[in-house]
Structure formats: C-alpha cells, structure tokens
Image 1 (cartoon, one colour):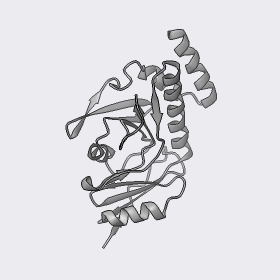
Image 2: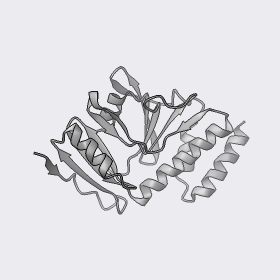
Image 3: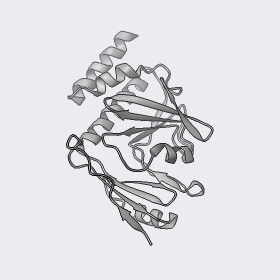
Image 4: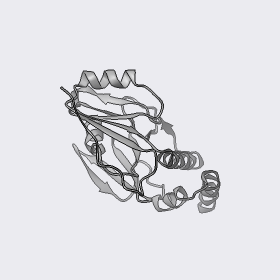
Length: 202
C-alpha cells in the first residue's frame, strides 16, 4: 500500500504556484508507470528507494533555470567549449532505485552516454527528497544548486558529494559573476550584458 504525505507548506515568501507532493512505499514499477503515463509538461518526479516526490515548478523557478541555462550556454559558445544540453530529460537507474528530471543538465566534450556529467537544480523552496542522494545513485559528477541567489556546487567523490568552490568541468566559468547576471530581472538584458562581460574579460 502506498502512503501519501504532503511536505510542509511553503512559507509566504515561496514563489506562488510551486507545489510538492510526496508518496511513500512506491515500487519501482509503479514509479516507472506513473512517469510514463503522467508525462505532462511541467510535472517533475523524483524517486529514491520507495519515496516518490511530484513537483510542479513555479514561474519563478522556470525563469531562474532558463536564465542559468542561457548564460551557461552563452559562456560555452563564447569560449568554444563543446557543451551538450539535455534539459529536463528523465534519467533512471533501477539497480539504485533512483530517478529524476534535472532542471537542466549537460555533458562537456562529447554527447551523453547514459547520464549527464553535471546537473543544475533551482531550489526556491525547501523540503522533499534529498536530490544529492538521487544523483549519487546515477553517478552524476557535479550537481549545481541555485539557492538564495548563489551557486552551491557539489562534486561526486566515490558514493558521496563534497562541496566545491568552482566547477571541475567548467573551471574557467566565474560563478560569482554568473550569479550576478542570473539575478538580473530582465533575462534578455542579462544575456546581452553577460556576453559583453565575457568579451571584455578576454
């Protein structure tokens, strides 16, 4: 039997429209069937060892993740870094009983083989499944969290993650500068300004 439990209600400062719902005691087969049958735009599912989180992101969440994606992809283009994007594709590993859709994910140097090399998660609210636990089971090398208007990076060491100050996959990317442009309220203006900053920085 599957038990359902709501996560705590978001605070008044949480972006409107973001919803989370958690189910416990979910089998792998049920998760796969739900993911395949409820393949609707905007619905994210995260599965970890019998716990399933369903999340519908807010407009603020989606705006932040697209701003980050556009800026990172612009950096790669300007610096001629071969970057391959896979958006919010579903990644699953039955042997580890884990699966999810990243907000954004990429490989550097060559196209994806099985799982992305790094993933980006926008964390505007707390609660839900620990994403690092899921990503470790998938073997994703780096996970970048956008939280409190800053980037927080983690690199996989064995089966656990440790915090890192800079990306080991994109070592020339200035994350402090990148965060400054992500915070701009006008996405188009931010991308143009970041392009100018990259070109002036040489």
